[in-house]
Amino acid sequence: MTDANPPVRRLGDWNPEPLRDIADEHGTPTYVIDLDRVEANAARLRAAFAGADIAYAVKANTSRAVLERLAAAGVDAECAAAGEVKRALDAGFPAERVRYTAVNPPARDLNYVLGTDAAADLTVTVGAEDTLNRVAERGFDGRLCVRVNPGVGAGHHEKVSTGAEPKFGVPYERAAAVCEQARGVGNLVGIHAHVGSGVSGDDLAAHRAMVDRMGELAREVGDLSFVAVGGGFGVPYRETESPLDLDAVARSTRDALGDVNARLAIEPGRYFVADAGVLLTTVNTVKPTPETTVVGIDAGMTTLARPALYDAYHAVRSLEPDRPEKKPTRVELAGPVCETADVLGRDRRLPAPTRGDLLAVGNAGAYGYEMASNYNSRPRPAVVAVADGDARLATRRETLADVTRLES
Ligand SMILES: *Cc1c(COP(=O)(O)O)cnc(C)c1O
Image (cartoon, protein in one colour):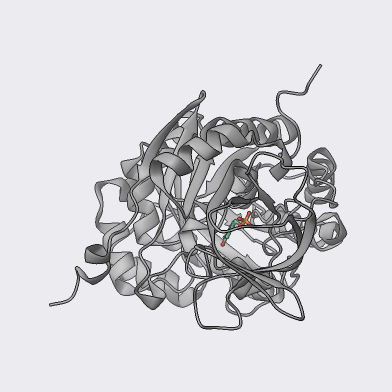
């Protein structure tokens, strides 16, 4: 028996043939996102966190195809910006299942979100007294949530460990008072905190400490619908890492929250989509050097920014049919941009790559296409959505004309 819904899908689990077909039809670099796997991840979160409100932090992957699938699956949408609120509503999330949790929202964003018809039903999270005032000044009297700075941070990299960073949320000591102020503006429905992104088993203590403080605050504030304890559930980027024990995280979360008269709410982003995506890329140039073999590929930091931005590791494999004569070679996978940071992986072993070989980069479903840029006037890649064995173009590749189309 094989488990239809394993806790993690490794790069080696992807069937190379359909991926080769996609590359043949759509070219590279191309992101592939498997919508069935996205939904399976939603089901696993729901099973582990039974009875909790489960939201998808849409910033991890805002592809319309992903949003439609998760809207249909009945999860909520956690949005970080006005554009994400628009996308969530357009994809079919009902307004009452949309939360807008912006960090110091630009006036244009606030005007947009509070000006939509959906404003009466969605939930606005404020992370500063000043933001609460700005919301009140715009006449908003709907559902409010207060983001709290729990004073505890964790995550895969200091750049995404948000919990203790003063930028995020109302200082814990002020939180109860700001909740009272929020009750004078609208309907206070929840409190919220998020320790950071990429939390692994090792960070569970930090997560627990945060949830514990949120439970304490919830009991002090009273009369809330939900206590949101963020997302940040990590996925194993290295083949040797073991998957997060979701049941253990859920148990520990409930334990730490204690007895509160409000629903638990979680809002992972990465966990829904990371292992549902791969990035397809082609070898352009192979260059033996005294130090290593440099393998030039057509995906770089403008396609997948995580290695350059966070020193992130992504597994890479060849999708070429096995050729026994190809000995594993130590390689550096280099993108096309003239920056030292534009290296997708160093000291990797691949079967002696040759020009034209197709490679796959694993765990590319989260913060991959989202962070792609036009630096170097490089068109952004295509996105192909796979569902029930069928592949369809979800986002077409940009052209050079697209790259310059906003200039006057
Ligand atoms: C980014 C973010 C998340 C999701 O983080 P993941 O690491 O993708 O799970 C959840 N909540 C908030 C407030 C965020 O900013």
